Amino acid sequence: MKKCNGYRTFRTYFLVFTLFTGLLLPAAKMDVSAASLRITNKNSVKTLWSGQSKTLKVSKSNVSYQTSNSDVVSVTKSGKITGEHAGTATITVSLKSNKEVKASVKVKVKYGGITSLSYNREEFTWYRCDSDDDYWQIDEETEGGDTPFMVYSDPYLIYADACKWSSSNEDVATIGEDGTVYFEDYGETTLTCKYGGKTATMYLTIEEYDEDEDDDDWDDWY
Image (cartoon, rainbow, N blue to C red):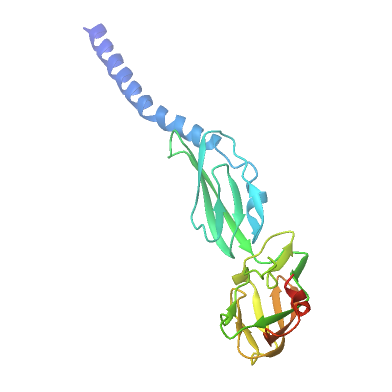
């Protein structure tokens, strides 16, 4: 009888142990898997300049990437992140085979970090017809394919709406938040773009187009 009781006791302990370990082992395995998915260059990607790109390095393959705010930080399928506008966004990396296994990094984007800023031209004459639009967009081309109001920066490209624009003579021309120049009257003004501690200027003259003038006066367009 004692042997029987002892057997039942042993069997009870064995069943309890099996049930207990059966519940814990899957969780333990998931914790190990989660710990093995890491962003190995996490510290070096926490800060980006607007326009700057870096590539995330992770400890596992077959992963997917997601951003919490693509207006701040964009991310490609290969893990390349790019600073868009100033702010903070979280990039999450997940195993494709198990979305519950993930790692993340919070990225801060700042304006600045450029070494040079300049207009496409130092000066430009806008020969304007009465039938022309009253504005000139930043990427709009002349007849010769030039974009006089385009602003260039190095080493990162910048967004026009991240710049501070101004016109020294708003009776002649004003300038919008995206760099678009708006005609007000004929005359002269200096356009200014400021970004990241750098300044670009262009001297603008707006003249009324005279069809009887010599074609040499159109040199500014080519």
